[in-house]
Amino acid sequence: MLDAVDAALMRALQGDGRATFQSLADGVGLSRTAVRARVRQLVRSGAVRIVGVLHTGVLGMEALGHVSFTVNGPVGPLMGKLGEREAVTFAALTAGRVQAVAQVRVADDRALTAELAELRSLPGVERLEVFRAGSVFKDSHSSVRRLQDIEMDALDWSLVRRLLVNGRASYADLARQVGLSQAAARSRVVRLIDSGVVHVTALVEPSALGTNEQLGLGVHCRGDAEALGVRLSAIDGISFLASGFGRYDLVATLTAPDRCRLVEVLESVRAASGVGHVETWDHLSVQKERRGGEHLMDRPTG
Image (cartoon, rainbow, N blue to C red; front, side, top):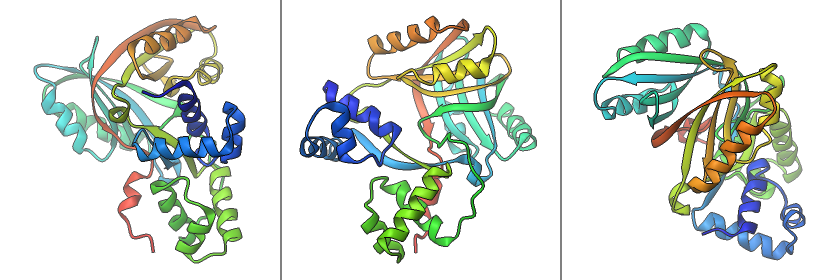
């Protein structure tokens, strides 16, 4: 099991996967050498992967829908079909009012309408409920910074693909791999991160930690949903959070190492100013979870 220092390092790396060992050391009160050893052990053990995640807007995937499924009969066949669909980036079998949930990312609302028509025809589906996301405040599998206008050339894409594999690759290694000077590689990487194209983060591996709990939330708010979303995004343990329209004002996913911590995060959400009724559903089994740009890793990197 991880101790409190490891947990603090993981949180810091989720915020900035390329943070220097010195800045990480300053945050936890250990030496730079000790922190370097801990981070390397976390990576070697498989507890975390430090990788780049791409902004979906770079790929033209501007429309995000959270879909809740009412299913007649076994849910397994539906989960298999959801796992095969390119537009589905997340799918989980759930306990609660609905039997499954999925996230769909497509180019626009017209494409979303077409995808929903396909989903309604899948095995056992009796009814869909759709939450159309507007603002995404937090997403551990995609960059959520505001995407700035940026022109990307072949070298930029080559750097992005390498960051998707190893988010902490040194500037020297990146420079050598793409044929740039170290200074030029650093300048390009900083530009890609600052513009919101890619975010380097730490992805926690539940199997390595021994346990992982996920809970979905549908939040009805009092007042401004956007302002509430900003406040809730500061809560540790929220791995996804978006405002939008549909059955809820906000949809969120909570992720925690155990039930006790999950309850603490849920209570923090319920206690937040502006939160009204909160509906929950348990993620019993996650069928699919794809990070932004993951499919690019299969392309040549030359």
